[in-house]
Amino acid sequence: MHRATLVALGLLLLGAVAHATPPARTAPPPRKVQTAAPPPVATQAADMAEADAATVEAAVAPVSTTDASGAKVMRGYRVSSASAETETEGSLRATFSLTALRPPIGYTSFQVVLNNTGSVPLPARVSYRSPVSDPPRTISRSVEVGPRQRVVVWLPVPESLSTGDLTVTSPDLPPIRRHVYADDSRDSALLVLGTSEPFVKATGLVEAGEQDEPHFAARFLEAGDAPRELASYVGFDAVVVTMSPLELPSDLWATLESYLLAGGRLVFTRYDERGLREHLPLLSEGLPRPPATYAFGQVWWCDAREPAVSCLAMILDLLKGEPETAEGVVSPMSLSQSERRGRISVLEGGAPLLGRARASMGGLFVFMLAFVAAVGPGAWMLARRRGPVAVLVAIPSVSLLTCLLLVAWSVVRDGFATYTARYSMTWLDDARARAVTLGVGAWYANLSLDSVRLPGTTVLVSPAQVASETADLDWTNGLELGAGFLPARTYREWGEVTVQPTRVRLVVRADGRVQNALGAPLEGGLVRWEGALRKLPSLADGEEGVLGEPVEEEEDGDAVDGLVDQHLSSGLFVRLSHDKHSFRSNLPEGGFVAVLRGPGPLPTSAIEMTLEAGVHLVRGTVREDKP
Image (cartoon, rainbow, N blue to C red; front, side, top):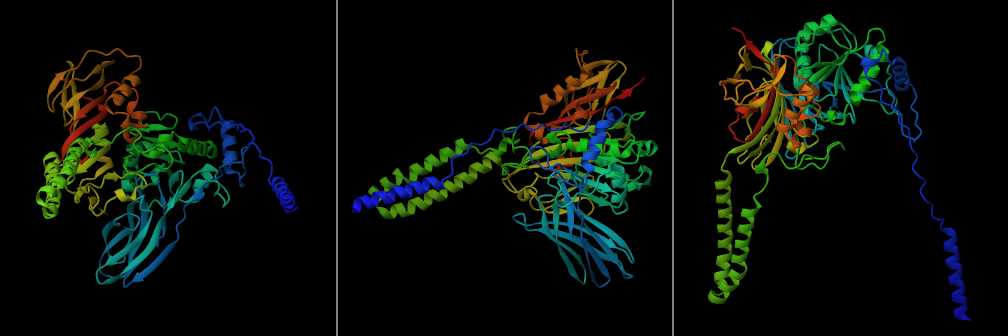
């Protein structure tokens, strides 16, 4: 009876469990979502006005909706607004912008406005210290604020140092300090020179609501207060100007042209051909439809007849771009990174650029085997013959000797030198005696190198979102690199963007002879001379030679493209040669692409180094030496 009762209770429990458990459901088959075609390029607005109008209508709708898959449809734009706080100490008043829009690469620029209400000049130092990196890094700039003067100070901070303390110090005054942080753009980041009203009028975009998914984040700056150095612009996806080109200050124009030359994208919502030609001398005669190529960069402008249609379609089109364009004009990589912004795996191209970064496992393995043999079987045999006291003396002695041998082996193998591998692409503007260079360098220093000064027209770019691979920076009178630039026995990659004066050139005479005046050994290349594509000979710096025979070609662009891919390996595509379509394009009459060896035309070439590899491509126009 007792057993029957237990069996009945067990059956009741099993039935209850079966009833409480819902039947297994199979996942529904995935639905195919028809994605909308990308908006047409602004240059085709006249032919596709209806499609552009649909793009505008979708982008400016006031309420966010979802598509057939349930995903949010992007609407409007997000304003990266910065609240300000002011504090006064003595005659010095400091106004801090507490947030700044963070670009995908490069530098986040924080703004401090200093006012001297007294009658005596005040020296001031603005510094940023971030706890994000280990050890903490300090970025600083020193200025002098004259009597009754207002000075706008911009402090470019590596984008990976996303939060820190901004401090203003002056002799005999207490420090003024505020905590600031970077506003992460997540996707696209635009810098807009001008106010929001003309931007909204030109594009038809409205500010996104809290529940909306914006197309991009925008930071608005007055032209008079905007930064005057390349580092504050180089990381942004695009810079939009909402005023006439003729209204921009000349010193700001110089900075914007450098940004454009170095691969930036400059958008004008007010078209003024005379203003563009006056400040952008590389533009071709008879402006084509936008975009117009300008060295490594692009110039865009809106159609004055339908600005709301053409501006919006154009901005959305250039932000869409190619996947690799969001990685920046140069993209140094880190061995400690596993992923960067979810787009490209680190070291996708393979191994590090510098062979010294690879440990010599063969030598270490020999030392390990010898040490194990000495302290293992050797110690056992010594204990049997001489007793345990001998072992207590021998093992520490063997360990010390092994350490000394390892140090000696390292010194003999590597010495105290700084090793580097350097690669660059240069656009040579011989008519204006300047060169625009984008480069990537891999470094390995056996002794730390913590004091290097570079010109103010040079931007040094660290790997994106890697705070541990930044350095102390001083932006006073150019750029001075401090601790962290090249730590001892650590692999580092740095990107370089520079616009600098130069006198280098390639001279071709009427008889077909060529002189290498490029400042480095010429290994080869291509030149279009008298309508034919011809090979450049290998020449030492200053040497003369004869142009090669004409090369059979289907398309000139394919020949240049092949030359770039031949000398810049696949590992350099993501780091440097991606999205350089203008550099790879057809050569005009007199145009050339030269392959050089050596440390290259970058400012860091002045550092004492041991060069492991150096490949540099230079594109320009030959100087004709006519009799």
